[in-house]
Image (cartoon, rainbow, N blue to C red; front, side, top):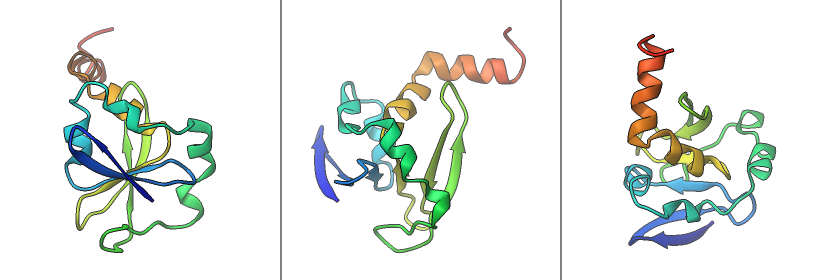
Amino acid sequence: MEQVVYAEIEVDRCTQCHGIWFDSREAEQLKTIEGSEILDDGEEVVGDRYDPSAKPLSCPRCRTPLLQMLDIDQHSIWYEKCVKCHGIWLDAGEFKKFKQNFSPNKTSKSIKRLWGFTP
């Protein structure tokens, strides 16, 4: 892992697969900062090769087994979360999608579509 910094927020990026570990709230903070997607410098196909279902992952901070989560929005993203320290692991290419999922207009449209308020 290597430490990379954007807007004074330090995250850890794997030098092999280019996945990113975000300590609690770092991803939430970074998704609102313009240009932060530059942290996600990996190729999505590389991230796909490192299938977390092949072997369970542990939190790099507290060693608690990570829980697989699914974010369904414009982009469906499987990611891993630590239930103890609340950090998250996003594979290469997923932070860009994570950030797009939470743009205000897209989120509200997705919620309305989910509940049948728009076509």
